[in-house]
Image 1 (tube, rainbow, N blue to C red):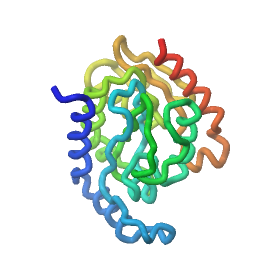
Image 2: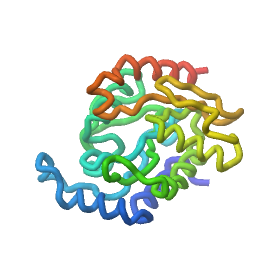
Image 3: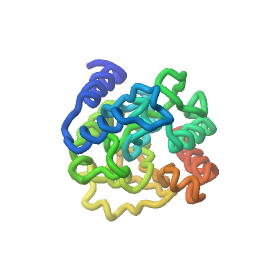
Image 4: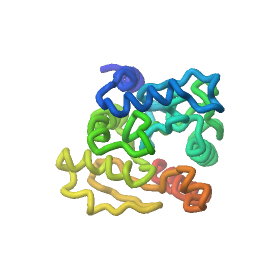
Length: 231
């Protein structure tokens, strides 16, 4: 069997080549052609965004989808947008990242014991993937779980929380997602031997600028996760 890093590399090559969702293909490529004025000198990534981080990580972070002018531009999860600014600053403070900023793929950022994935790999219009589009992406996340075998999962928002629970339901591990209520700071041991599930509000600009999410709120949850991983 190849090492985890080799398996993830093969999987990520498949993800980048994916064209399963015509609506998302059209949108991500249109954004990449038209660009935002501030980034007109950039060559946008404009493809599905692969996972990123430590191939042997105990913590897998599951986001929603790439931002149109963030990861869809830079080609790396949570890189080049305000959500990423907030997330990586929190991960750095908690000791999971070697630096607090994430600007481009070649900026030297390394994650330590963390791998970042997404419910949907392509930037969706209005940041809202359709249920069928989430379903089309599900197998990629399932394979990441099989390869990396994380000890904990941190869901960034309810859609990510439900996406993980849906996989457990489809595999007969749980009977209903409704048994596990999402909230900021939620924690669930969903099944013996399954990763411990943690939840936080998504670090979207809408949440961080209104104070619904603060650095202290993320720091508290990340400290709990670190204590759990060290057991």
